[in-house]
Image (cartoon, rainbow, N blue to C red; front, side, top):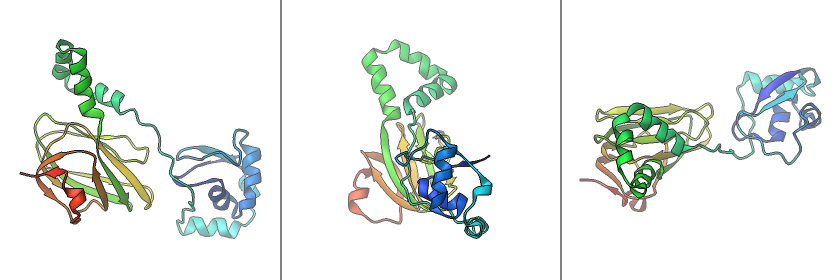
Length: 223
């Protein structure tokens, strides 16, 4: 028995067409995976058992594979990312002085500090296989990037200019989320391949974007 790892945006019909060349392959999927039923929402990374020898239309299966066609008509099911735990672990490991100083604060002050790091600041609706940003953060600020594709979040720190880029496995839509207490000397979204939505005030001495949308830019404060 073979195994197939579900791709982002695939439903049970998409998987059946991919593996068997026909949606009739659903019957083998249901038999081979006892936990699976017609109402199950598939998400990226799920592993399904199937019988390769039960392919109904092998020519379709071969054509999809040879032409690198991903059949997907479902919705992307986003995983739950524990940003709070990630941030606390990072600060404790790489910024021990800051972490130790928190013990001298009141519980309210500690909560305010942590919330400043794991509160969403910008949401980006990205389209395509690659996204690329240039940024330079101000000292002692932190940016956590959730790429929205089950890959490990990226933590950006330091005052040097750096390129922050990501390549997706597919060319569909992705939701990128920025967390952290970051302030920027430079924030360049010209190669973003998407639309950004600030969720609050963002400070950037220099902000560059190909989008000229007043409602999007009014929360990005430049100096």
